[in-house]
Amino acid sequence: LSRHVADWSVLPGNSIGTVCGWRRYMADSRFLDINGSTSMTLLDRGAEEGLTGTVPTEFGLMTEMTGMILSKTGLTSTIPTELGNLVKVVSGMSFYENFLTGTVPTELGKLEKIVKQGFLFDTNRLSSSLPTELGKMTGLSAGFTFDANSITAAIPTELGRLTNMHMYFGVPSNKISSSIPTELGMLTEMSMLLLLRDNKISSTIPTEFGNWCKLEAEFSLGRNSLTGGIPTELGKMSSFKLAFTLDSNSLSSSVPTELGSLSLLIQTVTFASNLLSSTIPTELGQLSGFLEYLDLCHNSFSTAIPTELGSLQKIQGILCIHTDPMSSSELPTQLGNLATIRDSLILKSSGLVGPIPTQIGKLKKMTSLLDLGGNQFSSLPSELGRLHKMSRKVFLGTNSFQSTVPTQLGKMDEMISEFELSYCSLTGTLPTELGRFLDFDYSFTMQGVSRAA
Image 1: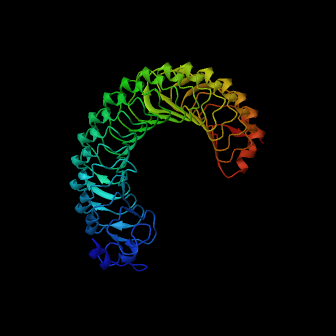
Image 2: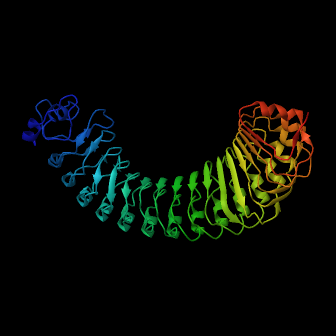
Image 3: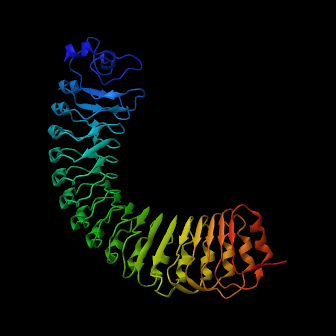
C-alpha cells in the first residue's frame, strides 16, 4: 500500500477519486504518520467541502481499515467491489449524501464485523437490489440505511438476521414494490427508527411486527400500497412514544381496539388516507399523553365520533377525523375538553348534524384551522367568537344553518387568511362587527348573506 500512497497527491480543487491526487489527502496526520505508514485504520472525511470524483478501487488495499466515513463529500461513481476486502471494519462504513450510482456490491456482505456507527448509504442514486449477503452483518447494532435511493427489488429476507439492530433500520423513499418480509419481525431489539415509508410496497403488514415490543419511536409505513387490515398485534408495542404512521395506503377494515394500549404516545398518530371503515375505536381515547397529532381523515368510518376522544385532554397540535358523510351523527360535546389543542380541528364532510356544540368555544388556544364545513350542522353558536387566537382559516360553509350570523364572530380579531361561511342558508345581514374582515387581504366568502348598509 505504501507504494500506492506515495503515488497519490491531492491539490486544492482536484478530484479525490483518481489514483493521482491522494498523497497529501491520505497523509493527513490524523490518519497516517509522516512516513506514510500502511497501518491506516480510520478514514474520516465526512462533510468535507470540495471533494468530488470517484471512489478509488485502491481503497480495497487498506486492509487494516476499521472505519470509513466519506459522507457528504460529493463522490460519484459506483461502489467498488474492492471495499469488500476491508473485513476488519468494525466502526462503520458511511457514504450517505453523495452521488453514488449502480448496485450495491454483494462483496460488502464480507464486512461481517461492523458493529457500531452504521452501514450508511442513504441519499445516493443506488438502484436495483440490496444483496442478500448484507444479512451476514449480524453484529450491526445501529444504522442500516438506504433511504432516498432508487432500489426496486424486494427487501431481502436475510436482513431478518440483523438481530442486534436496536436503532435506525431504513429503506424509505425508494421504489420497492414487493412484500415486506415477515423475517423483519425478528429485529426484536429495535427501539427506534424503523422506516419503510414512501415506497410502493403492496403487501399486508406482517403480524410479526408485533414482536417489536421495545420500539419507542418512528414506526413509519406510510405512503405505500399496503393492503389488508392493521394487525391487532401492533398493540403489543406498548413502549411506543413517537410517530406511528400508516397514512396513504389501502388499509381496510377497522382500527384495532388494541392500539389503545399505546398510551405513552406523545407525538404523531396517523391512519389518514386509507380505506378504513367500521367504527373509530373508543379505546383511542386512552392515548391521553401529550399527543401532538391524531389524523384519521380520508377514510370511511361509518359511525359517530366517539365521545371518549374528549379524553385526549393533552393533545397539542391537530385532531383530524373524517367519517362517512352519510353517517348522520352529532359532534360530541366532549371535544370541548381538548383545551390544549393549539393548531387545528378538522371535521369536514363527516355527516355531522345538529348544532355545533357551544363547547367548541373552549378551544381558545387554537390558532390555525377550524374546519367544520361540508356537514349538516343546524346552528352556529356565538361561542365560536371566543376563539380569539384563530388567525388563519375558519371553514364553516356548506352546512344547514338556519339563523343569522352571530356578531360575536367579529371577536376573532387576529384573522389574516380565510373565513368561509358560504352555502349555509344563513339569513339577515352581515353584522358590522364582521365587516372589517372585508378590509383585509384574505378570502372572506359568505354567499347568501347581504352586507349591512
